[in-house]
Every structure is written in C-alpha cells, then in structure tokens.
Image (cartoon, rainbow, N blue to C red; front, side):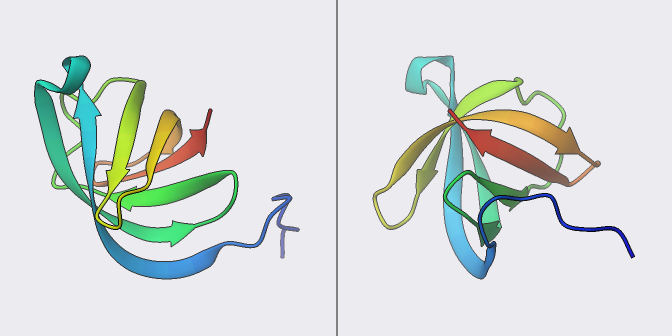
Length: 81
C-alpha cells in the first residue's frame, strides 16, 4: 500500500459548487467530494472545456482559485492557489 503524501487530512464531503471561468462569464456545475486546506476532489459531467486554472465557488459562499493537478473524464483533483 502506497503512503499518502498529503500534508492535510481530506474531509469527505458532498457539496455543490461551480467552476467559474472567463471572468465569470462561464460556469460549470460540480460536486465537491473531498476537501482539505490545500485542495479538493471535484466531480463534473465532463472535463471537456475546463481550463487548467479556474475559480471554485462553493455553495456555502467560499471561493478558491485552483489549478488542476490530475483528472479523469469526470473527476479532477485541484490545488488551491
């Protein structure tokens, strides 16, 4: 089993969010599946059209500037900037 190299514990969650791009003119719905002080795992319908860097706007009012660290067709891991 591989050691987890994260500095911060990930908290499982199921929260709504939006990926905001193009100075707020484009948004993509997402679900935040886990969250830590340094990043999050997001579930989306498709990663097609998503830029490498964007703003994550959480349903609870929090906002984070993010960059994609890894992705599959429907999930992405992001680091908060």
